[in-house]
Image (cartoon, rainbow, N blue to C red; front, top):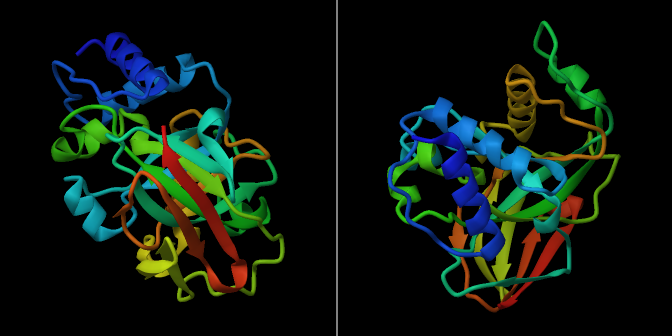
Length: 256
């Protein structure tokens, strides 16, 4: 597989909001991350953060992998609660409700793993968030992780609600989280669906990014994976993700 050619095809598909065919998929995750790195380098937008994916056993099974994954969040597809998102009819629009951490310091490559305490002390705020999942290559979900990771790890849009710096007393493991679509409850879950604890996902992704040579920088988001699974929604709808005491995150979806 030609890394550059595939990356350029994925960049074009993302910019044109289309779904494409490719001749061959990455053979393994190493090749998939190489493509993802080339996309992030050449896409032409700032990174606003990173997403964790496949953070539940069922998601790993569906993606034919035994480990989580990460992918970039781009400036042009990062939104605030209450914003509108236009998408074409072919967009999968699979909605995930996630705990997202805004980073208050830099975490760069180092000769050891960062401890959970070090990572927690580097968090500026915690936010209720929505991720909109979509893939731009036909058959990517059927192939699994090695195809989805290359395709921005399936990110279509990231939406952050108002955050708080005073989050240490919140029960982010057991607090019920719900997704409402047009005022009707559509999905529920808890933080423990994210590797048992969203903080475990946060630590995993920061340390993995550093091993792979990235620096997580002050002001970037880390969104830790779905509490509620993936829920498809209509092209036009109103979404509300409710995280109890942490607050809500909303998104207005419309036709492109």
